[in-house]
Image: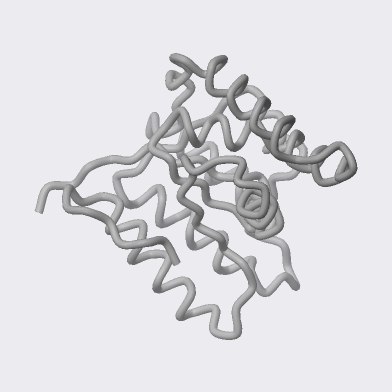
Length: 180
């Protein structure tokens, strides 16, 4: 089976959780980061994403990031058409989220950089932020995002296994099943 590298977007929430002692998701997030590196995938990183990572990444994530740089798996060259994508997403937020919901509009606007990078790449966003997905879904803001939510689960090992399987599925040429 031929492997195909995908250009993924990883939210700072995953980098923050990886290595946070006491967080039940720490092991899952750090393992997902390692799985991304081991499988043939690459990660898109815009300046806004890099700035967010710098503020929130754990020590484990810093090591992962250095390894990804060394392996040339962090990519900034996905920016073709990104301004048009960002403008489209901003228009969607402004048109679909009523002014009366200013807090929710603000929450969506602060994460537009993630949605923009995801839409400009292979469309997969890895995050712990279920609230962002819920906001996008409830207002119909974008359909160009395939969500891989690393949310708390009763069975972290099962969730990790499903997530790993999904990352492997993304690396094949055959159609991919829905994300966990």
